[in-house]
Image (cartoon, rainbow, N blue to C red):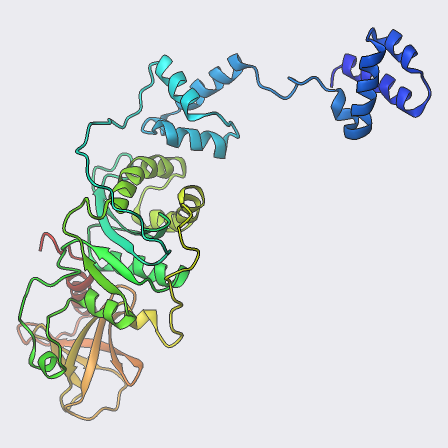
Length: 408
């Protein structure tokens, strides 16, 4: 408040308190008596702030232009598009401008968006599902997410078809079982069990070995072979649907276009340079993205159902093999012999061997996990060195959980 506004406020206050007449106040300030009466009414309702000039909190246009240029020229915003830059201005600098103003301003200053828009074929757009959790789309995308690192890393994701909100994001070196396990884990913990999941034809989701069932599967009444991922979905009561093309799962394909642009800038701003830091950041980024971009579904009811308390995600989200133990509590897997530690078990007993990055290699017997150690390698040579044991376990985890299924 400048001196002129202070004087005006003081005189109007005296007028309101009865220490000065309207005529005297009008003579002091050089206003009409009618305007003094308006100022008195404002003062009574809003107080001293009503005496401020209407432009006192507005930033001059020229100053705003200079500020926008200075911010946009910062190196971390080299790859940012117009809409993302608008969001950053609002979140980090408290500058609120319209998209059209920002687009025209940047265009006038010869600053173009890095995204090149090209004409695309017109496809029939499928209507959204009506309920949250009725259909989730799952996929993975490789991209160079880190500045200065030319390696591609693969982002796995799940997005709800009805609301457009992300239910899970996880980054791995390549597209693999581990990445899909983690986005499923996030979805089950934070949202619940969906009704359907829409996936492409990757061998992670759908088997390529038609009509090849094991004897045990045939005796169990299974008619079609299934993948490890498919078996987990069956156990949860989730229907896995095969998408015939990328256009069919367009919701998640458009999400990848958005995240390819935004995450590079977000990682740069937050000094994120590796997968571990990225996965920690993505947990909070999901909330930020959903708050801004999720849409209201047609039906208020949810198709998500709560995860049963009896379900243990640690043992559920693993690659599972059935094996039979011998007289020494040992079993064989891919020609490598393993021994189960600290277990009292009868010969010829069937056990479940679980493999995941989270637990390594474990045996599940009577709902209890047991540690295993490799004792003979593929060439039937005894394994004695600890380094060799760790290497064999790491090789099993990579082959079952971390390898790129498409390349393999």
